[in-house]
Length: 486
Image 1 (tube, rainbow, N blue to C red):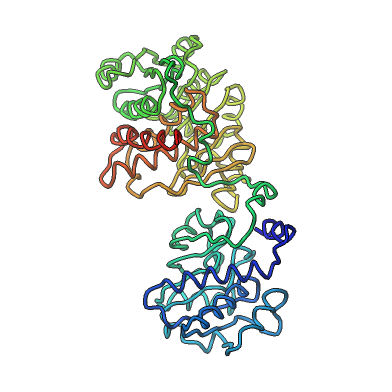
Image 2 (tube, helix red, strand yellow):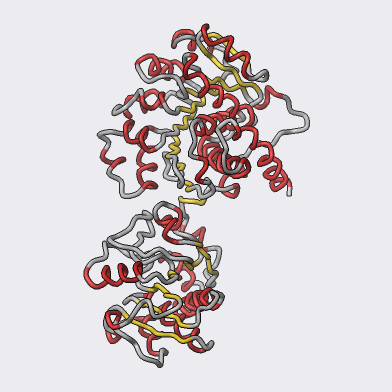
């Protein structure tokens, strides 16, 4: 954001104008709040506080009863913050002397995205008082104490009802617990040119169609099933075979032209009877799987759901990797616990690979990898993991991060809480395999799979089970293809 601000100034917009517009945007949000006639504005010593001074002045001019408290010395303000503070013609209170509960609404303009250390002393005490005051809060840029890069709390943070940020959201608005603390996030246009994006060259994106629609496979009128690829899902024994069925169903619904379940002979009748559109082949072990994959048309393989952790699964991954497009989930990852480097060596021979761990699988796989597990945020950890294994990493959760080895990343925001159900991850692996089978690049395929997964869950609604997700994808695809066609 500092670079975006600097670009705007370079293009002719004074920084003071940007601050005036930011404060005005905050005042506009406060003015729309019902019954908020008594407003307390808490300002910090930097530019975030400057935005607060502007908002306070505009609200006072509009007839609101405004009280302003400054954390720090007014005479020590500098730059634009000092300039706007001089325009405030009313009292400036000490925060310690203010009853935070004696207002209808608090504007939190203490610290923004530039916070670089944990809050302590008077700053932390004030934020804790704000959290305990029980009043709705409108945060400027970010709730004070929230790290804009990591989404983590730096000492203390008060949850906001609404957050007003500028130009673009920050990772902290999307990564938990930051997302929950921000409340409703409004992005205000303060006049930073869109060309600033090209100047800043961001590598982190909100996961949505805009991030991957350029690569999304679109069925052609003259196409046929063989154009849409053939995915193989490797199944374990009968008592865990449902996971592979969910994965295979997900791959088929996502658009793979053909899907085959490769399974032990004892499971063939069960798998063959489950889904008429999915083929079955006997492949009880790694050697049989390697023989099956001698058919070059079987170029996408998903392994892990219900497969069982251990040496045989490691051998199956080794058999599937050379020249293939891979999706590895669940047991295929746990089988390499603490040996991410060994997995990386196998994936080096793949055409591309996507791994889809939840937090526990991620911790097991990267045990001992300090650069990964010691990373300061979920986003940083996923990026470090992707570099280490040379694959696209889908680090699952309510704020699922998709990261590529080159540093690009997407953060999801559309997963509903009822998506946390048994088998949902198996379907996600299938969605990714179905998109890879159609030739979609791995980073974009993983991002699209995560977004589709969330949308399918929203379509299915509360009470969903994993079996509902592939079926709900039909309606999601209907809307998506209509949007892409438009």
